[in-house]
Amino acid sequence: MKDRVFSRKEWAFLITISLSLGIRQMAMTMVMPFISTYSKTLMYNSATLAGVALGIFGLMQAIFQIPFGILSDKIGNKRVMLIGLMQVIIGLIIAFRAKSIYMLIVARALQGSGAIIATGYSWVTGSVSDEKRPKALSLLGMIIGFAASASFALGPLTRKFLSVRQMFLISAILIFLVWSVILIFLKNPPAIKNEETLEEKIDTRHVIKELLSNRVFVTLNIAGFFNNYILVSVFYIVPIYLEKITGINGMWKVFMPAVIIAIICMRRSIKFVERGHGLKLILIAFIISAIGLVFYFNNKSFYFILIGTIFFMIAYISLCTLIPSVANEIAKDGSRGTANGIINSFQFIGSFVGSVITGALWENHESMVLVVVITISIVGLLLVRASEK
Image (cartoon, rainbow, N blue to C red; front, side, top):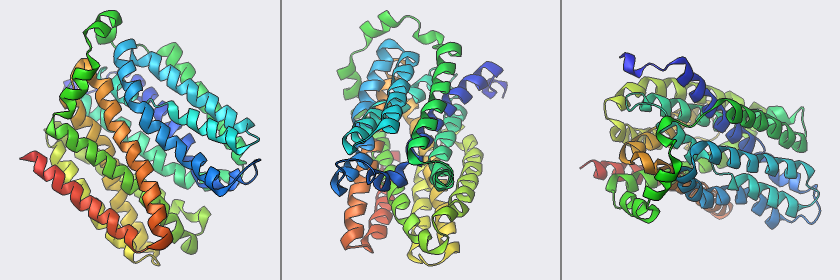
């Protein structure tokens, strides 16, 4: 049992990495509801360019996750984390200084290109023993999931006191503080000290081919795609429902309780992950997601939306934790950056595709949005079920 207890140094490391990725995620998500309105204050704005400014972040995340993951295997996680976070900081400062919609698009693209989530997961998995890995990844997943969800509630509250430009600047300052802590206090794990030797041994093409030939790994990628597709769909439709019930500033009444309950449930499920039941829990998570989505059909009831969001958040945060945990059991030590890069790339592609399709369906076939995401949940559980055999 002692083998699964973190030391003080490990706790400090895990909290620092988790907070750095969590703060980054919160900074990116908090401003998302206001991009379209903020764009109207900039020169050369149009509805199309505002949409590009909103969506380009996710697209760049999808493009750069794999290259950053591969790079972390070659030059070390710390260097890649520092490079990626600095790109985000510069992107936030450019957004703060933006006078035209084109500057905002460049800023959002730069923020998205700092794709270091996969690197963070790789750094964590390479810094703890196999026995501690599920708990470490659970902590990381919970903090990132909490930050993404809580920011959707905190954004409208923060907007009451700060302008969107000021939110960009404050986010840049917070991330710079985290960047400084990583630079000064964190070190790469011993396993990655001999980076030159590691670089010579890594055959990236072979690693990718080997990973994509693994049936479970491919299933995990599809599961991550589905999870993020459902996430952006929920974040698209639930605010529309709640605007008529609680108002924009009252959304926290749904999202905060849902996130807290989801984290409690995730903590209780860690022991099952440690026993090797990760795939079974992923299957259960998709079932819970589908159940929660059904509640949204009664979109005029605060309590139905609350219950549906609680079920969804339990599923979403669980999948955020379980998918990388199982994936890192498949990946070898020298290829975890690449593996996590592929996983995270599929997730962000899911976010991009989900936002586009959900928006298109909502405009012309509103009732189909829930049918599609429920179907995706069912397909997800069927795929996971098939991969267990």
